[in-house]
Length: 417
Image 1 (cartoon, rainbow, N blue to C red):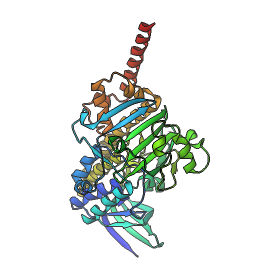
Image 2 (image 1 turned 90 degrees about the vertical axis):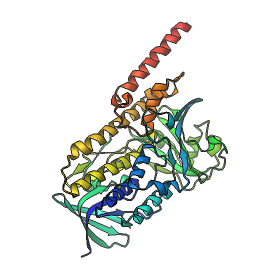
Image 3 (image 1 turned 45 degrees about the vertical axis):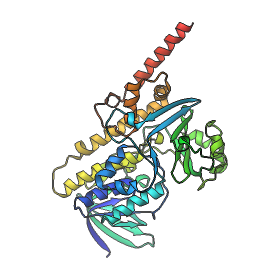
Image 4 (image 1 turned 60 degrees about the vertical axis):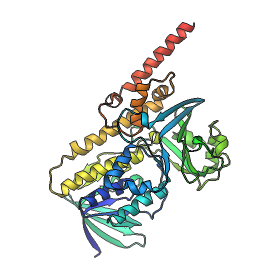
């Protein structure tokens, strides 16, 4: 029988898995990664947030990323029918990184995986976890390689960083419907043949074409750009024809970007993800922890995916290292509570975006610098800063400020009458 023994098995070699495994390797934990696909491989989520730079730095993955010449992201721009709202990460409330990157994920993830291997972590690519049996906290994992060969990995703990693959949620029946509205997306990477040569050409932009429909434009340093629409599932499905025809027709909704991308060749046939928001019944159990998209995926509007993945990947690794060393760990308090807090904050802002209240704050003139810098911290991924009232009061503050804006506008209308 082909059998291995490790302290920790990490499922998935994406950013969350590499951060987790690198931390464990740095702390002399016997760790191994299994990854279903062959790298490099394409995956969505190309816009990072400054908060994840802390994670890469802490586990020793930052320096190799700095050598890759990725497009620097210093903020984000939101457009709506001629209105403009710019966020500058250097003008945020919370101290921390003022910049990050816009990255082609196939290249980015491959760099992370290669550096993780160089640090001493073995990664078995094209190996799929097809079964897991727990004996207390210990587990026996059945893995099948691309040729159909079976092997068994015995682990003291599992970190599921499989992202959209959601390996343990499927095997352990942990999936549940998301409470967020059903949204879908259609996207591709385009050869940006009409890219402006000034800062306009490299600026990440979210173009709001309707309250619940928006276009992302994420330029990369290699001359290509990720473009994609997000909207209610029924909106995406209302377009007919091939996915290329659907995306080209949708581009007509964007007065700002239509001419730039109408003739831009696609690197691949546009992909469609239906009802992308997901949730689970629990994010840990005896012998396992879920990280990032394996547990929750919210919405791409604030580019939180990779940052949430690396935040939970690093935290899970720290707690699992303690467990392996025999220390007492309260996963409910030390993992579930902080993770759920971050999910709740992002969820509030996603909901208020689609309600229109957050858009009202973004595009209101004149801008309120104090409000803007506090929201900017959230957009930078620093959603665990409890000195920020826009975080501690996340479930009501946006609605309250939007109401004040409505009262102010009503007052101005009365005066004009």
